[in-house]
Image 1: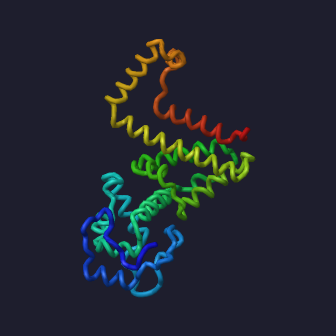
Image 2: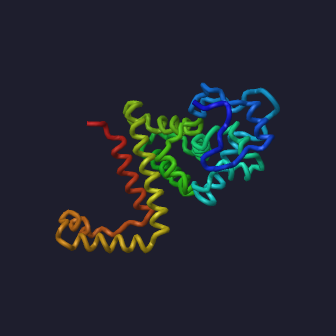
Amino acid sequence: MPSSKRPTSPDEPGQQPTGTDRAIESATPTPPDAPELIWLRPERTGRGPRPAHSRASIAAAAVRIADAEGLDAVSMRRVAAALGAGTMSLYNYVPKKEHLLDLMLDAAAAEYDFAALAPTGDCRADLVRLGHRQLDLCRRHPWLPALVLARPGIGPNALRYTDHYLAVTAPSGLSGGARMEAMALFNGFVCQYAQYERSAASGAKWQAELMGYLTQAATSGAYPNLAAAFADPSPPADPATAFDRALGRVITAMLSPAQ
């Protein structure tokens, strides 16, 4: 259980709190029975002066750092510097690094325009639109796909996304539980595609070598099924077409009743 005294953060070795930071910490100690999930913790207790920061401002600063330099560059110290705050004082808003990641995920989810994505009753078409918006979001925030796959968020904005997805898929006739399972497949595909897209764009030499390697394997005679696939005369699809085609297959699987 967390103690009332905040230890030095693992990403800030050796840092000592200032006198001001100690005063803030002692004024707002972390209760030993505080919930682990940040969404179950009040943003402020209502005691003392009005807070100088908020979860939203802290998350926004962290997102800006991650967008510019990658997720590894995000630390409580960097966020505090961006806000002009003492590092230790931020722990009164965000008790640990994992909570900061949760806030970042939810800040990204706030960018969905659900009014523009209002369900039309055509489940398939609505899911295609949603998939494209999610891919756009992943492109704007390159750090997002890996974080979604590693630590799915369930903050207020993520819950709005979930509720919207359930509304979109309601015409499918599938149960709520089946649609929730399918949502993991949908989100996972889009995030993994975004990761692959980014890797391919930054590794042209690797891509060329990979295709050469696969072609060599296909013509070796050791992999007859791979050879048959490579013999398909269909021209390779451009990235946009490839995404739409793969997304369509995922949606077909999502909307099919389980056998």
